[in-house]
Amino acid sequence: MSLFDSISALAGIFGREGHDLGHLTLRAAVPEADLDPEAGRVTALDLYLDNLDLSDPCVIGGVLGLQLAGREDLPRFQTGRAVIAVGGALQRSTDWPLTWVVIAIGEEEAIVVDTATPACAVHGSIGRVVVPLADRLEDYLRAVVALMRIELEHGMEITDDDLTVREEIEAQIRSEITPLLGPQNAEGFLELHLD
Image 1 (cartoon, helix red, strand yellow):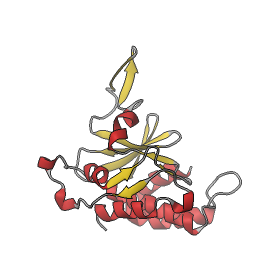
Image 2 (tube, one colour; image 1 turned 30 degrees about the horizontal axis):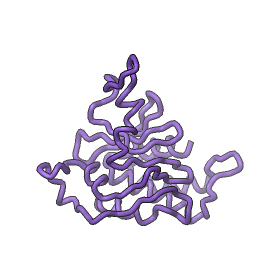
Image 3 (spheres, helix red, strand yellow; image 1 turned 90 degrees about the horizontal axis):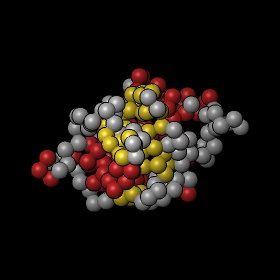
């Protein structure tokens, strides 16, 4: 599966009978072959942003609870992480890597892509704690789509009364995302999104 296929899969499943909020559709295809420095598209993040049309807010519901950033929303999503207020003025944080871009936020977490490489590794950040989620944006999107599909298969009822993901469903999620992300990244994904 390619990055474009992963982006298409996300656009295809988004909505889930009203469980996701906002609008997310696929724009006219810009395939990976068009990762062109002269056109300003040099990373997987560029391709992701060029291929998705998002409304504000655009929220993946269910256990993920992630608000996604479109290109226009990126500056706002950096506030409090890459950009901080110092003496009433916004400035770049010296603690935040220059190549990290927040693409989604949850209740406490931020989903960050590292644009240091064209594939854009993905990390989850809760405060100063950072966990690896995927070596490539493409893989992270595939894992998100897998979790969204599993929720849909179970009628969006994957948690118990304490809002803990049921053990058998967590096992199903683990078995599907581990081959996509690798064991270490899968553990980070489960820790960030299911705990």
